[in-house]
Length: 192
Image (spheres, rainbow, N blue to C red):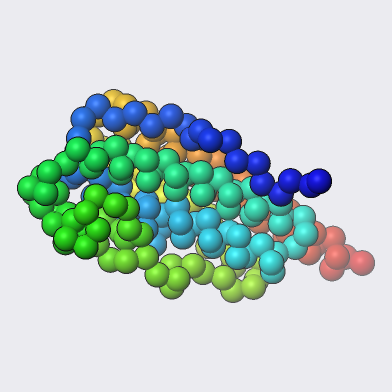
């Protein structure tokens, strides 16, 4: 029997929070359901892999599935930051609308409360264009993680956010390598 997925019932990186903090949870929603968040990234890469050269399909698959692991980390952080929050704390944090609709349940939306949309996913069917889009997405996610790190004094949360920020850096580097590989392949083909 061939296993396509092996799911380990543990997070890619541990999530610890020092205290209930719905305000920070609200901002973390940007990486949950925002345009440059983990869900959009996972779906973008797994979608683009169908029109990308064989040499980099595996890279898009690997990074796309890792983004789902990051989505799970963000979801866990948001859950832990809000699970003990009162309705008053949710309202004070700017999550009153969210609470009215969802309680403390997660919902794919950004920090401003805008629901996730498929328009966040870019795909042109041109490997170079798509990979540059992916590099930009990773750099925007890195910047967002840095902003989130700057917005908290919770050392446990900072630790997890730092891990996620560094993974975005690694992904951007890998996508840059893929661009060079594709350019090199095109150059070799045009020589013959």
